[in-house]
Image 1 (cartoon, rainbow, N blue to C red):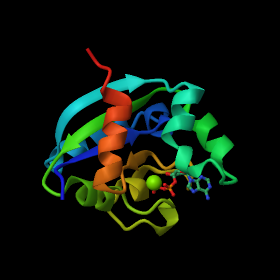
Image 2 (tube, helix red, strand yellow; image 1 turned 90 degrees about the vertical axis):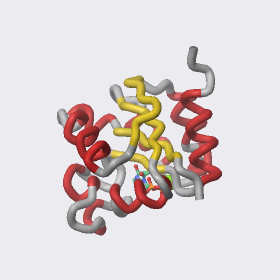
Image 3 (cartoon, protein in one colour; image 1 turned 180 degrees about the horizontal axis):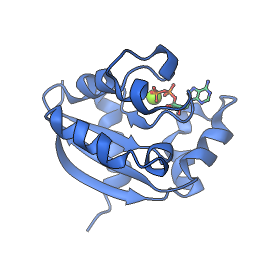
Length: 136
Ligand code: ADP
Ligand code: MG
């Protein structure tokens, strides 16, 4: 168990002015924001980030969506961060997400689902490095 995870507040949530509300939820749930940056992903950045899904039928749409506007990338800290953040965001499909989860409250669809969360400690480290390692 590692105490860090990687999150994205996705373009749909920024576009619908839910960025501040989601940051508030992050803080109320006692995550510490170690790093955060508002970016607009390039196609190559989004393709690299979601490379694991490159054979999936939704890959092209997913990359377009992730590049469609600004999103916020965050490094979060909390004991058992990966599991805690995944349980706070809820299921990929908002129709299947539990009440009180971020995706239940903010997501529009399975694709435009407002937030990302790393699915393992190993991927959390890879994803944090992917967006933050070259920072000055
Ligand atoms: P999660 O983000 O919950 O870990 P996945 O890793 O399976 O989900 O998928 C990555 C992202 O790809 C999802 O968050 C969602 O934006 C998009 N996605 C997943 N499945 C679909 C689908 N069937 N149709 C459209 N978009 C999808
Ligand atoms: Mg995933």
